[in-house]
Amino acid sequence: MNDDLPAGGLGRRGFLAAATLAAGASALAACSTDPSAAASWTRLTGGGGDWDDVRALFPLDREVVDMSAMLLTSHPKPVADAIARHRDGLDRNPVAYLRDNNDRLQNAARDATGRYLGIPGAQVALADSTTMAVSLVYQGLRLSPGDEVLTTDRDYYVTHEALRFASDKRGFSVRRIDHIPTLEGATADELADRIVREVRPQTKAVALTWVHSSTGLKMPIRAVADRLAPINATRAPDDRVLLCVDGVHGYGNQNETLESLGADFLMAGCHKWLFGPRGTGIIAGTADAWARLDPVIPTFLDSAAYGRWKRDEPSPPTTAAMATPGGFKAFEHLWALAEAYRLHDALGKNRVANRTAELAGALKDGLAALPNVTLRTPRSAALSAGIVSFDVIGANPWDVVEALQAKQIYASVAPYRTPYVRLTPSIRNSPDEIETVLRELRGFGAAA
Image 1: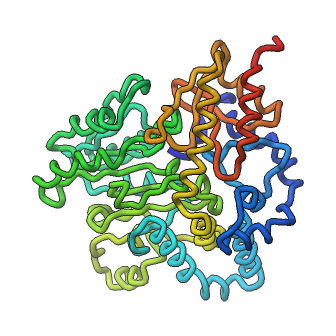
Image 2: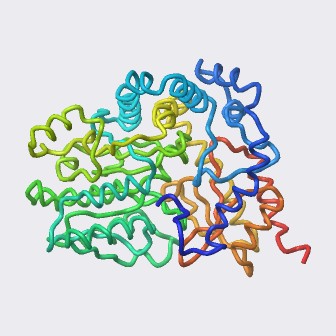
């Protein structure tokens, strides 16, 4: 899921989320980081600080209620400082700075990701976005005609298209099953059972989304993994069902490791809820999962790759380093990725998850109480994260977003066949901003 604005095919309204952000670009450009940001960062890293200190790290327009964390982040101070430092080093001496820093800082980013997910950094590949990460996994899965990947009709455009492209090349089949028709009253057990009972002998991978960017549903990935375990116990290693998860809208706002989540592959962009550098993403995989993947783009990170090429040797079993695309990049952004984890380390993953749930819960409770609103996201924190989707009764969702934008509240529309209005409160927002949103929606259409 989820670079929610794919190029082409959605028209003007399909791109309203991008338009709402662009409309405020001049105002945002005029803002500079709060002068107190350095002091706030010192307090946070020293074990103190509060949520106002967190907000002070972001150079956000203080006149705007920005609930767009699911789209593209504003760089917090530690990330912005690292980008500037690396950019200056590259500008002064590109060759020397690249030579002295590239491998070290890419591996530092992998190690920081690994610590965040409770795995060795060697099990992390770097990418540019969720879209790239998802595509690298589904293009690389070692599947053949007769094999099958199972997914659902509610998964995102990128998952569906990446699987289609890969199946066209490799000849495996993709089967989309109907997802649960209504989320009202849904349970984790029901959602997990609905997936796993569709697994067949030829099913070699299940492709799911952790948090859906349409409804905000958080899928019970752990429950799916637990139900797959007895199936996999009867299979040979190369026939076991891989659980592949587009995790971008849980990555950075949920307190999970790769093991606790239960995924074999977790793909995510880092420039959303993690508040990492724009243009960065990760693939985290188990050792067994990496062994069943073929690299798609030649790497520069595997130190032995050039030697194998020169000697015309076959590739060994795939590692995450081999699966990390090479090429010359926006290195200053890639190298600053490790800094994004410092904010989460300073706050603690559980505190971040609890704050996200608190704000999203307050927004959901408030929306559910409005007679002119239909909430589309599950109320339960067990089945939702930071995305809150809803309809205003009798109103076109794009009109709602435009009306909110006129009040300096930035929302977006889900780019699906059934569009909903989405607000995505994050740790950079406040309870007062939740009340501002609810106040505007409470009176929506009243003037007319």
